[in-house]
Amino acid sequence: MTAIPDVNCEEVVFKDMDGDEFKFTLTDSGKMCYWLNGQRRPEFSELSWQPAMGVPGIALPDINKGFPIPRKQTPEILGKLRFLSKQAKASMNVNIPEVIVIPEGDRPGIDNAIAEKMLSARANQ
Image (cartoon, rainbow, N blue to C red; front, side):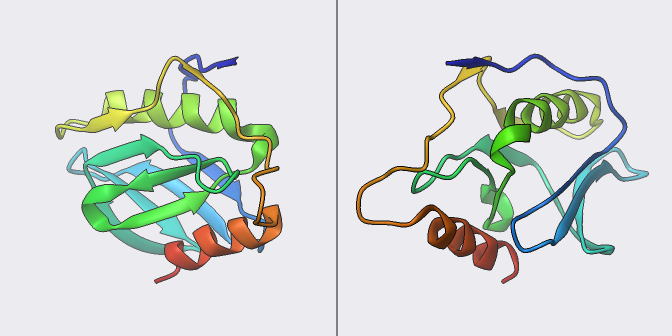
């Protein structure tokens, strides 16, 4: 089990296994949005911890997106995202627990790299 403390920040930036850069920020209107490789993407109001197929990830259910996040940075990224969501002026539905279990990536029947590519493909739709 891994504790997820809030981490003070103004933005959250990370790269996925394909080298795509994700940046999460607040808009001028106080809503959260994300950027993919420098291109602004939609605002969102839902954010969840979503380990899928042995891969740590996040989901944005209201805009039907999901992203893998780097395993070694998972606690820091989740802590920053939760902190940033609390700064949003718009109402946010955030499901990032105080304590998580980071998947080991050894789910039978699926290779970790394949699972990460599947989540990454969903992010680029």
